[in-house]
Amino acid sequence: MTLIEMAAIIGAITGSVSLGIVIYKTTQERSKLSIQDKDAYHFPPLNENYNFHEFNVTLTVSNKGKRSTTIHSANLSFNFEGKTFRPEMSGHTYFIQPDSSEKISLNFHTKKEEFSKNVDLDNGTLELFHTHGKKTIQLQKIRNAK
Image 1 (cartoon, rainbow, N blue to C red):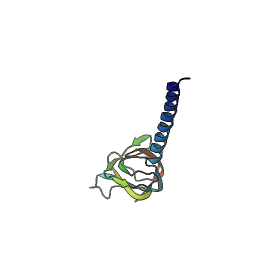
Image 2 (image 1 turned 120 degrees about the horizontal axis):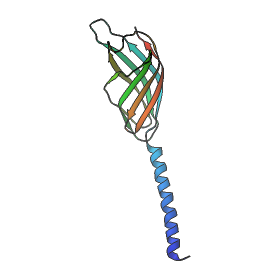
Image 3 (image 1 turned 90 degrees about the vertical axis):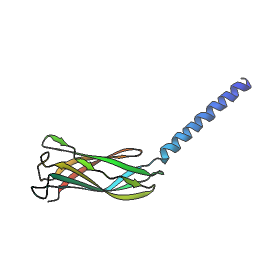
Image 4 (image 1 turned 30 degrees about the vertical axis):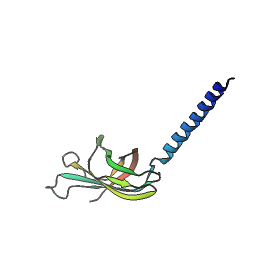
């Protein structure tokens, strides 16, 4: 084996190990969200002049990563009587620092004509879209607040 071949082998091994270290550090530094204390409520229209059903999801989001992240949008969906409903989000963004927790409140609405029931809802899904990806949360119950 020549000196050039040995240098090439050492260079290939060093480069591979360096690439592995960079990939490992990148995955360890990104934000890691965990969710606690989920509450979801459905607010029927206050009177016949009010045209919307409101949905509120309150939760505590913890960022256990080394980078901050921003929750820039969310989707709520639930099934009722064989139909899937996806209320629109009333927009806010939430900035979450590394190694911290934030209590956030997400508001959604749908027109009175689209959803006309004043009942508890089972098995909703909440998707949080943040700077570094998406987090999906199952909501066991969306309680009727009336």
